[in-house]
Length: 478
Image (cartoon, rainbow, N blue to C red):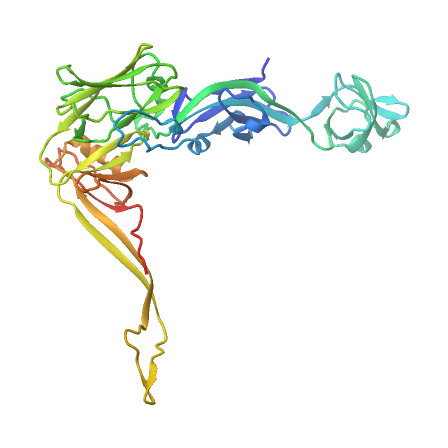
């Protein structure tokens, strides 16, 4: 029977950037040198040393004696984003943003026995009785008596096992030195060898994804766990891993527009056939698409407007195994534009969303030069020194150009104003413009270092601006 008890564990599917904590207890926690051991393996693989992803040895917590380990930092290193399918307008495999793992729960402690039997004389040496002690002749052992060796000082410390049977062993201490044969003590190996059990209990097929769920820290909601069952996508009406909520109009909805790039992540299962359907607000089918994952993972599902969608709409995703997503609603923005530009960004839950920048755009550049002042050789002409045509003193040897774009949104609803902060804080942003020929689609960096979340209670008309710089500098020759 395992000596490990699982006190707490994370949900089946967890955001990698939230705490992922395992808490266990063990009946051996009071043994000397005790450590809890958490070993992480890939799911559905052999639990052998070659497959170990990470292993943690943890001291018992001072207050409870439990073993506690948060593996979120490890999981963050095992998931990433996948932008390869952006602009493809079709669902694509994004399983790099998902990882499945097993956890072996074990323990270790220093081998020892606590004897409480009367010390005996065995051929002039001290014999200690203990059932199934494990010592053999030649072992080096350390004996620690309960009184610190006051009564039997010769028995205290390092000794050699002379002989041993199953339930008794004799050490090289003369029995004639024993002053109190009823004194109890502890015997350990001199090399502090340990009893180690790595797989006392097992947790299998846990999952993480490249997300950071806002659990409303410092509010009454902080005690609510992440509801992983809402995102597993097996049965019922479930959610996609995005921060856009499935509000129903007239509640606020995300704003979509012509060519908007929205890709919401869905936990999928291999062998199931999935269907994506776009409906207008009168429940008329506008468009549909299908995909068939070959294996379990996460797919980025395109939910932006297609060429057949030019009105307010909602999207449903379902498969042939009784899964149906909750509907995700979008307000279609068909206003006249000055520029057709957008920023595609990774939201907090690992999906891709987009913002339109339809008003005027200003392109600027910053130039840096590195120079040195070289000697001017000149020439001698008629016994006089004169210069040489076009000779340089100051010479530029390194020129860098950094281009920035000042982008401006159109007037927006309050929900989009709240959503805009995710764009400003996103670590992965792409600039997409159809105003240029060829179309410009490239990585960029948002320069903003602060933001204000506008509310229509404070500001009736809301629009935003942002400054970006392209992620690659223009090459300069010379």
